[in-house]
View (cartoon, rainbow, N blue to C red):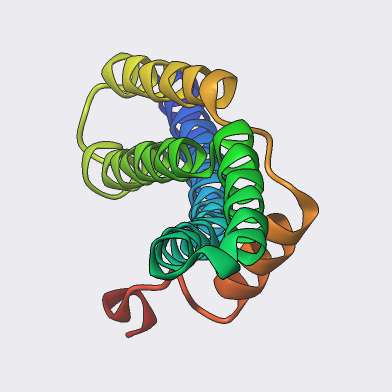
Length: 174
C-alpha cells in the first residue's frame, strides 16, 4: 500500500467513524424520545381507563342497589362510556406499545453502531465496515418511517434526560 492509499484509508476510516457517531446520537435521541412518548401514552391510558372502570362499577352498583339511584347510575354509565369511547379512539395502549417497540429498536441500532465503531472499525476491512454502516443506516431509516412522530414535550424531556447523563454508562466516564 502506498503512502497515499494509507492516508486515504485513514481518512475514510475517520469518515466512517464520524458517521457511526452520528448514527449513534440519532438513535440515542430517537430511543429516548420514544421512551418519553411511551410514558405519556401510559399516563393517558391510565388517566382515561381507571375512571372509566370505576364509573362503570359505580353505575352498576347504584343501579342494582335501589331504583332511586337510576339517575346517578345513568350519569355514571354515560360518563364511563364517554371515557371508554375516548380511550378507544385515542388507542393509547396500542400507541404506548408502538412507542416502546420503536424505542427498543432505536436502542438496538445505537448499540450496534457503538460496537462497530469501538470494536470492528479499527480492525475490520473498510469495505466490511462500510457495508455494516449502510445496513445500520437502512435499519434506522426504516424505523424512522414506522415510528410515530414525537411531540415537543417528549423531545424536551428526552433532551433533558440525555443531558443529565441518562444515556451514559459508568465505563465511559472512567
